[in-house]
Amino acid sequence: MSRKKIKVVFAGGGTGGHIYPGIAIADELKKKFASPDEIEIHWIGNSSGMDASILEKNLVSSGGSISFFHGIPCGKLRRYFSLKNISDMFKICAGFFKSILILKKIKPDFLFSKGGFVSVPPCAAAFILKIPYFTHECDFTPGLATRINSCNAAKILLSYSETSKYFDSGLRGKCIATGNPVRPSFYEDKSLAGKKFLGISEDCKKDILLVLGGSLGAEQINRLVLECIGELKKKYIVVHQTGKKFAMENPSVMASADESYRPYEFIYSEMVSVIQAADVVVSRAGANSLWECAVCGKPMILIPLCGAGTRGDQVDNAEYFSSRGAAVSLAGEAASKENLISALNRLSIPEERKKMSENCGAICGESRPSEIISNLIMEQVKI
Image (tube, rainbow, N blue to C red; front, side, top):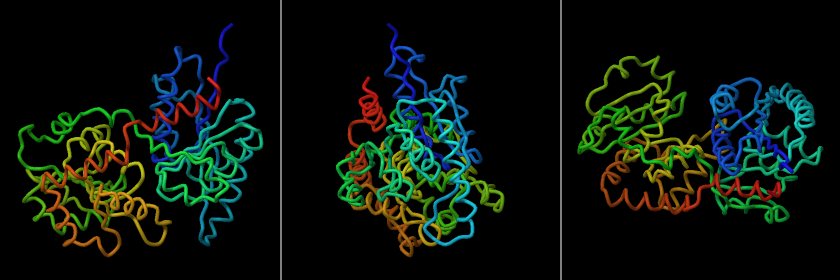
């Protein structure tokens, strides 16, 4: 008798941070079956935005892990007053009813929520249809979507064990610290390929400083780095991902590349190898970029996004890594030229970088989060 095909639905999106970790888990799940025909993996994401384009590379037609993508209308969950809350409430309701129809048609054995506002309607629909689901929180402090999803989740998966304290006592028994999944390529040493892409010789004596501001860039980080670029170039080769907007508005900066300053609008498929080639990383403190750098053992100087329009999750992430000796946090007014130069002077000492790298390893642990989570899913569907 042939074994019943297992159907798993992933829910989440809105940003790559809610998609790439799910892809890593889906890849691990597929490895557990002798034939790809034994498991069918679907993804429910935002019908508009980047979700479909990110997942396009992972569709079954290209040999990836995701078999089908289903778009739903999405509204953002805000904790502050905005007129958009009214129209977005209709989108959330529409997303819920469409999720009901999608799940009824698929009849999945299980649903996994990677979080974000896109995941709330599918989780609510799964609860109504009695489909078990897990929800995963990547940040140190849980967002509103995770808080809502956790109420009816079979398990609440966390990147950090300490995050469980933010849940009600009745939910803490469901909490499991798994870490934050990153793609398998981050566990492979491609540092030499990174240096080759950057045009840096293998025997170069200067350390490489990688500055990341995300695909759109980070104005604060860009300006801060340029304020002290002369000082930084004395000790580092500065590889600066500026973001598209900054690059378009500052052509003179993009044209100022030399042996010690390499500006890029955006680094695409080579990003994994470039991170691995770096000696120090300056970055925001989004959960995924943090874990991607941490599994590579990279010392980090974190300049978290803070102020209006953010719930402070990056500040919390940065403070946690800083408290564990895995990063230097420069939040708010601490993000000054003097403090950045001071931190980079400290991290130009190999012994300091080694300590921070070891502390990154202590946070990430020896087991891969994607393997831990895929095993938990397999237990849930009783395979």
